[in-house]
Image 1: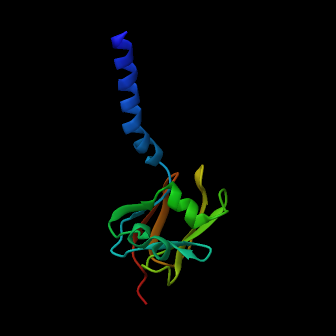
Image 2: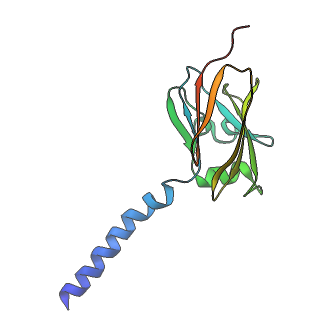
Image 3: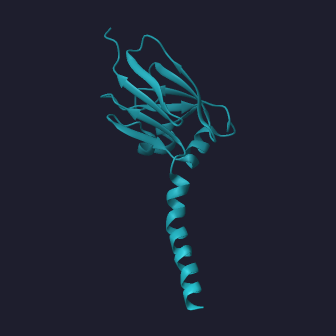
Length: 138
């Protein structure tokens, strides 16, 4: 009898610690920023850095992103068709380098790469956009 209750207690403790990891892993929107510029993204009129501060910044030379809760806040009612413009500035200004159509359950469903920006953009995974290179000289 004692062994059974210990078994269930072990399962409950393992589930308690594993749940936060499972609920965070693999969800949200991410930018693998391999440039020397910080970036941001905007859905409608909501800029990631205005809404979330540093948490919404696509930090240079790093993988940055927002979890599923923040993605839902940024996208609002557009759960399956959230259109986000990606910028290589901290405040969603300047030219758009790519437009991402994002489904909050499935991830990236379309990536429209803007030509002539000098940045290399591609879909790295279902939830991650890769950005490399840099702006074209004027």
